[in-house]
Length: 373
Image (cartoon, rainbow, N blue to C red):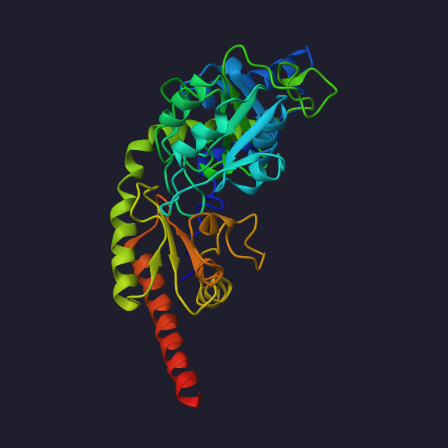
């Protein structure tokens, strides 16, 4: 059987989302047109905007639809003048958006160093945007966003939170977190790829990256992806309704990690000593690169990844694990296993069996090399 354990890269699209998108695609209308076809399309966009806003306890007027999480992160980081301060474990779409940004170090657990952040904010004259993700896409480690916001506000800084991995897995509330900007992506919560949102607090207006028409209250020009946005809305509603069920995945993840540890006592579980997403495990197997593990598992019908999906084709070690203090070899030996709401115990057992066999062969190969030497 084929087993998909890469839900942090993208989730299966909910059947209800497919049905909604199919029905929308069968209709004609530009959401900017004033005739009845256009008004129908506009209503679909507005309904989805309300659903996305409810997912993060914000106002529909504050939701800016984008082409995905990457654009949302870029709009947040590049939409304001001044300086940027970002955590060292951010997604590449944040790090690359502002190459001039100062990086906040993290401890060996992957948690932002609040003392260092405080020092970085003291004495800055320009407007500062602080960007820290809610939950890391590789390790699942959850950041103390409320504390970061409290500290940043004392120094007059804006706070952007990439909540793309957290949405649908944790309660994400703009009001409770106190952030100014928050990024979302539909395909991480059972929606379609190619659509996301930046949620902006009242009174803020990021400078648009795309100019032209007056769509999205002139904050993002371009004809709306009506079917994708409608699908996003359905996915947001489903994610909100099923949020309470997600925590139960942790028991299956923990069972998996115990079995992996039994099979390879030298296995390293990055971020496991810190609160993390219930579905995420970043496990290192010393002496075997993540790429080889991914390929071996793929041949056995099991899909995992070697870090972020956006960079898994690279041979370089994970910048997240390096920031956590891992050396190059340790960082290169890690894979990410991310479970979904429908992951079954027998699928985990199959993965563990294949991985354990791979780990056993690694030990035999190492013994052979030592005997030859």
